[in-house]
Length: 400
Image 1 (cartoon, rainbow, N blue to C red):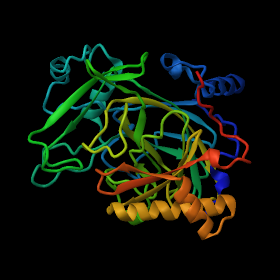
Image 2: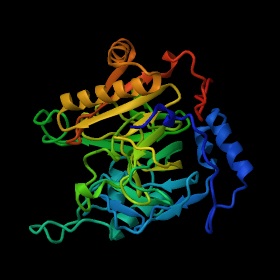
Image 3: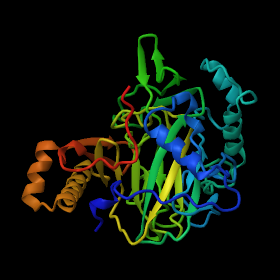
Image 4: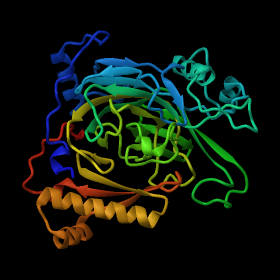
């Protein structure tokens, strides 16, 4: 069983370079990341956070709707490396539709030719070989699903280890996002009288997604899918819809810039995947999706040898997070509670009765999402409870 020491108390190992890295001096990279953690880098310049490797959005790097343990890694890194990943998404048009027509109809002032990110996304959708075979009754169809980039191979990672993913930055790379609802989907099937979609213009300077003239949604960009490759026991080409012990489609809105995700490793090299880019989401994600867009993320990967996790955990500057996942929401709640009790026992040495009463008095349990077949509950454990702990977390929340 993992100890609480994995939650942000160990310093990052230095990034180690090999051929093909960005060639940024270590001192400058460390300084820039530190400044960003202190909130001194604005949203408009967030992508200036230095990195060691860049993973572009290409047909070869993209994979749709599933994870594969046999797909060629998009990159191989050592523990401590910082990686910039250019994601896809925002493609709410049908495969048979012209994206430019859809954009114009929805008042989005770009075209495929004038926007580099969109051109990369459209090319990956059209040309990626990494899709599951179509069903027998639709032999010419294209199997879709989450737009994912990966895998990233982490040297020396083996089953039984854990992977720490520090989220240094998440920034939308499109000026819009969109979500939708259908009569048969979401958390209220049968309520919607007809399909409905909504396009939001994103204003990064004001940190807002515009719903209409009266309502704006604060941006909280994050990737809904972050996971290591599932174990072989879940079968080959495991679909990405449902999250699991490996993480995956958690749709956890707290995994924004400054957060850390901790994942079990089930395959050699960890084989990390990310995608399903969001600009913002409400807990529950009740209509079926959030504000879908395309994000550029900058992650640091730190391998913890011999440290075993039962499932994903996370950390923010203010909270520890434990996830419970199950097709039954009551069972998901039960798993989240038991996991939180385990954490409190690990961290403070409490017995069951002490942990149970503290949990009831001070820990919030939230619905992560209720639309991905495997449903999610997560606990929010305030760090301020632990009055004798020193704050050694790597990120500082901006105070201005």
